[in-house]
Length: 160
Image 1: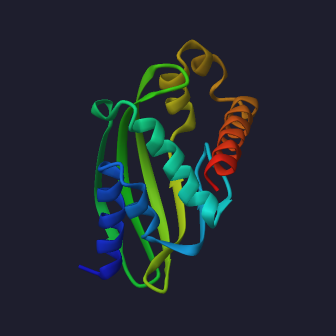
Image 2: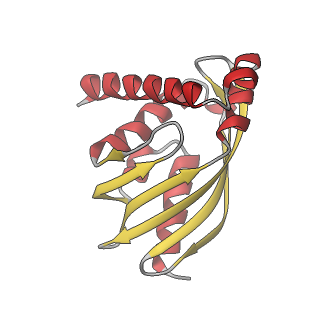
């Protein structure tokens, strides 16, 4: 097993335990992250996003479950599939999200992390009828991204 596979495993094990510090320790200081809800994050924004999400999950930890598998990595790149089960705090709706992750590595740390998932599937679970009717539209995706960006900026102001 390549050491970068161990790094990915450490990242998701920390996430499953709601240990944001353990997750952040896996990242290079110049990390770049992107997913459909949080596009184009850099550096400390990435760790802050995970801390913000974990703070919310810790309010109801029995509601949280993470599974991960198919971890592959070499010196330059890696991938994994992970599944998250949680209740979206904004709507109170249950979500089961299936995510494919890709990674790049530098100096023994994760330098790039991209998560992809079916945004429309997620929106239907997370927002019910609104997600069903609008979740496929670029307007709705941009609205979600603007909301998550605003929440992250508020979190960064409060927590440095």
